[in-house]
Length: 175
Image (cartoon, rainbow, N blue to C red; front, side):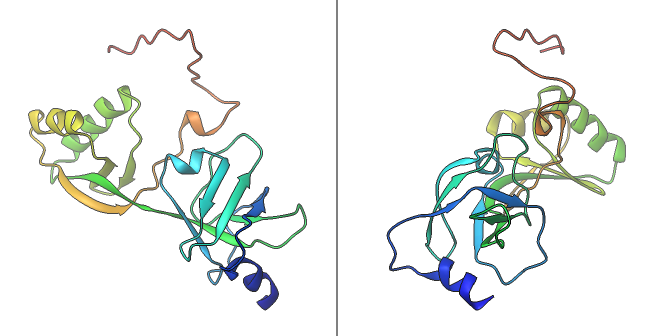
């Protein structure tokens, strides 16, 4: 355990640590954290840095987006060396005593393919002035918030499932 931590914590090594394998949700909370936004968790290749500044190079197989809690390793049978966490992002938080108002907001946002994090009595989405105006026009009072964002997995998170938008896609969802 100490040896793997030493590999990741070596700040004096300018060479990025190559991570090419994913382990779903390791229980190792002691691993160095790789904080990624929701959009960055979909980009499975490229240079990144751990929270402590260690350079990393991701070369993960295409497919499912990373999820908070996933571990990343350098070899197929190797131990997880870092743990993915959701980075804080600027969000709009919607709360309402009227469950129907939140359900309607979720419908309208989903119709626009907006990623949502859903809680009992609350919706969160990435801050966007156009969507904020739409929600205010619907009688809701979005609050700006900075927090980790882990939206619901949807059809886009599973490359073999459901609704896919190709380059020639013509959307017929009412917008």
